[in-house]
Structures are given as C-alpha cells and as structure tokens.
Length: 218
Image (cartoon, rainbow, N blue to C red):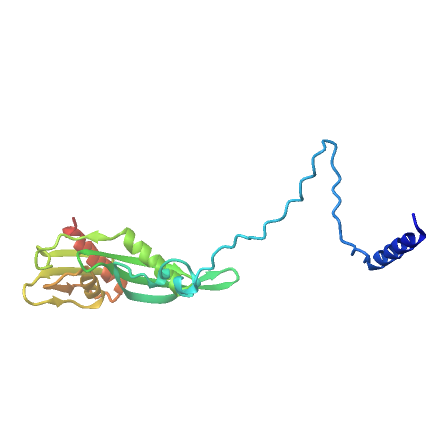
C-alpha cells in the first residue's frame, strides 16, 4: 500500500476521533432476577384516596346542636295543669332542719279527664314533676252529658272538706276555691259547686271534689 494513502487514512481516523463526543451518564435500573427467574413484584403503593365522612350541615340539626326534632321542653303536652298550692316544708333532723318543697296541682285534658297530684322534693321543678306523675296515675275519666255537664247531683267528704256539685243548665260554671280549678281542667260546664264546710285547705277541697266526681266516673 503506498505511503501517501496510509497518511491520509491516519488523518481521517484522528479527525473522526476528535468528533466523537462522550455519551451522558444515565441512571440505569438494574433488576436482579429471583431464584425462579421472574422479576420481583413492585412494592405496593398506598392508596392516596382516604374515605372521609361527609360533614353534615349544622342547619339540619335541631336547637342546641342536637339531632332530630325539638327539645323535650318544646313538645306540648296533651294535658293542661294548674297549680293549686306550693309551699316550703321543714323536717327536723339530728343536725338541724331540712327544707323541701311541696307542690299540688290539677291535671286534665278539658274533655272529661282530671286528676289531682301532690309531690315533694328539694327543688320546685322536681316537686311539680312528681305531682304531675301522681296526678296521671290517679286520673278519672268522667261520664258527662252532651252539654259537658254532670247527669245528677254528687256530694263527697274528704277529711274536713265537704263539697256538693249540682247541674245547673244555662248558668255556666259557678264554683270557688280549688274546686273551680278541678271543674275547669275537667271541662265541666253548667254546674254549681258549694263548699259545705269551713275548711280553707285547697288540697283537701280539690280532693273532695275528685271524690265527688268519682261517682260519675266511667
């Protein structure tokens, strides 16, 4: 081979080597096969979706932040009540006196049902609640006429109280003391009630009226 051709080929090789640029280094993932020869499974990825309970709107809740309807105090009872006596009573103990409250009331639906209850407790509200339960247990259902009056005269005595109730068409309700409260809550009209005793005890007068009305109860 002539010498001139070898020099030209040498120069071309040098120029080609100068044009060669180094390749950039890249991260290569190396997978090591397991014993069975299969590639390992990728690590489980935690699910980013988190179940969250839907936040309920506070407007949907009842008063005071409670769920459901209104409070127990907001519910209207089917019975009407009227206090006929509330007083403070004292009981003598070894360390001194202990004071409680006594409440008496008349309970009814003004449709022929009526009862008188008495309750005692250290708090006034609790005494009234006990009296309400007592009145419900002893409630009477009266057999009234079409005009919401009584069919005949009734009379009764309780302790020192004596009460007489008579029908009086067209006169309305004529009564006094706690007997009037009993007749109003019971829904009785066109009657005249008379206290034949000198007792001023409202609880005894109310109980005497209840005993008189027991004669026309169903």
